[in-house]
Length: 145
Ligand SMILES: [Zn+2]
Ligand SMILES: [Zn+2]
Image 1: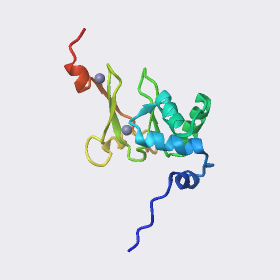
Image 2: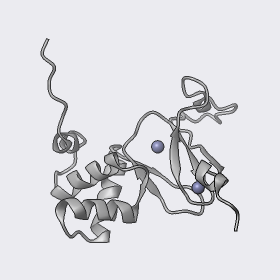
Image 3: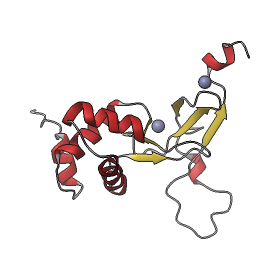
Image 4: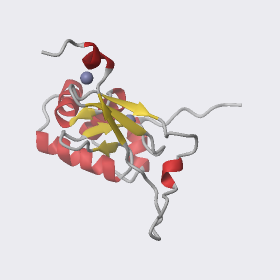
């Protein structure tokens, strides 16, 4: 049995119907290697890979890749949007109120039960966005000033 090689980032972009540019390839790789990065962190990661790119170009590429389903945007209330490469599994997030660190949380019990709403109002539901808020271990341990 010969395993076919995994698609390159460029092939994934093409497969999603997107034009392949160096900036988009760098952005997708930055988001995937990062950990729930905000726009500033994505921009600096892209710049490390391809040199200067305007913030507007970063926003445009983030929008294109989010629409294509290659990356996911999470928008915690009252804090900047974050981007991640883990898509399509309806996982959730836990976020620290104090320092803003974010971690992945799998759905509470097994097969995404949160998608079975107690009343779906006739909607065909494909995503439940849950953010658990609290204090991370570092902030819990820090002496309050
Ligand atoms: Zn914290
Ligand atoms: Zn996540």
